[in-house]
Image (cartoon, rainbow, N blue to C red; front, side, top):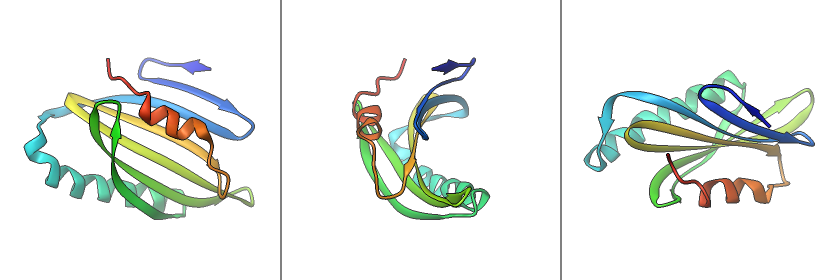
Amino acid sequence: MTRTGTTVAASHGGETVSVTTFRLTKPYRPQLRKQAVTELDQVAAKLAAELKGTVVASRTVRAGSSAARQYDLAFTKDGERLVERITFVLRGRQEYELLCRYKAGKEEPACAQLVTSFRPT
């Protein structure tokens, strides 16, 4: 496990889970959900492009007690097909980015557990 000022991450056998926090310039309110989804869709597309991959799924999920937006990005790295599942949780002035990377076709239970057990500080 590694920990920096804003990130906690763990890796095992090529799979990775992490949580990173960011401070938002303006507080998020549920009334802004539609605009936030549009912006997060654009962020996910940009992240996928940086990985030379594609967004293969997007959905709204529950992360702990909060509504969250989740994306699956499919890409290839060193000849291996991977999926990066990113879940964005917005609360007040905090953005939490929950990330899980795993081999395509082999979803890890840690991904679901990361999202369902998440409790923001």
